[in-house]
Length: 93
Image (cartoon, rainbow, N blue to C red; front, side):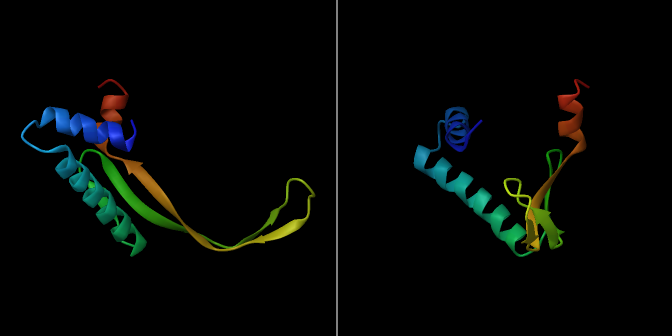
């Protein structure tokens, strides 16, 4: 499912809301998750999962084309851990 499909599904299930309002709500939710993660906070949606940020240390990598050693800088990467309810539904429980 992509963002526009999510917006359409919410709008279809809530006919009292305008499409533009649903777009604003979905955008706000995503923006808040992004802002929280950017500041290093963890975002937990009970039953769905938790978003967090993990740091990857700098390291020496290899250029696959030339085999030359390359310095890879330290970076932060998003991490998602599924919640119990989601995991159970995926496994048919």
